[in-house]
Length: 517
Image (tube, rainbow, N blue to C red; front, side, top):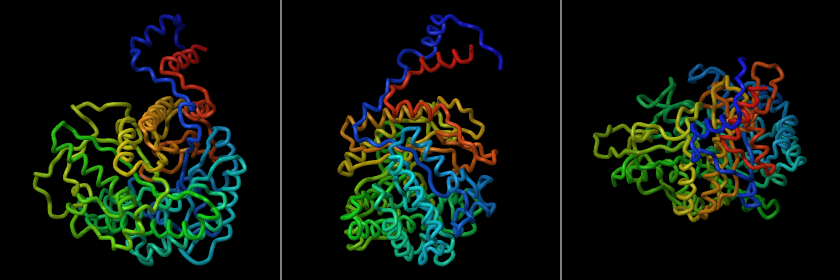
């Protein structure tokens, strides 16, 4: 690499100030700004990180079948992934070195119960006991998700997975085993990861396993499905399964284990494109469809009225007993947040008789306003980074749903496969969203933790290995899958250990100084 000519520091500083403007520097951010019991962590999920898909009695999950079907948009699979199944001790040591309070993980239903029900796989049980014990030995809290979109294929073959109410009983049995075997060391349980996005991704556009959709809505070559109905069926059964599992935990395990249990939502924030009343109503519809689809039932016991109106008979109804079981079925709400966008009303436009989830909202969506994107662009998603969207979302949950405890369980920055280790943009992204979280807390939000996605580079469910979200780089070409800390890992470690974040000028001076050495 060519050396950069030496530049007098005062001239460099003036050039940087001219380029950035004083207002563009990041505010100093410190862990001490957050409540003393605020939890910071990072996460992964079983299929995306473990590998070892055919080892020690694990049966195929829906993702094993989907990724080997040739129907997905990308090449690759989680057969090996980051091989945490064999490297968990190394990874937990890195978590400790980083300073994490918590590690968000999931349990592979296929590894623990290969038949979906019945006999426990002893080697799967041993693996999760070993992983959880390793975490607790290092003082790291396991935040465990029971279902991260990967049920056993045998249940898909038997009765269609989440399309059948039969899954409620099987999922409750799986959860019962997890609570019994691991609950003495797990302080926080999440029943299901983002059921709203899973329903749309897997049963409307077909991006996720089991890749069901119908034309013209599918973006992959789906082999079956009905995009107009199935997403609503899947969420309905997911909510019933969630309520069943929470009732089980509270009745059988809470008094002894004292854990918290909640449900996760893929939380988007929609703002109106213009100041018109019509666009404001379109934005509200979007927030009701995306967020209220999950939050209204567990807070109020029913779906948002606008969903019942727009979807009609395609939206299943809850019985009085189901509504009672759902209402209040959480100790916290988990929020995964990546996207904020604008809505423009189109409720007066001609609508096709056959509609899917997005058309049911009666709105057009855009990531840009006034023909110009705002904020940092996230390469992995090619969308603007908008921390204010998270702040608005947290404030909306506070105002609309009684200010429940919230854990931000995913928020992250994807970069292309060949990114460098000097991922300063990811550190800026994290800092921006941490500032937004802090602003929401100062405005009264009951947000208790921030768990970023992801701790390691993993197999991404939408993009495979073409985008990386990890604090730690994984060399997927290396037989040992070497882990290397990125700049963002070092930045996060300094933040977690009480050192203030440097602003952009400080960082740019450091980079120029390094290049001059």
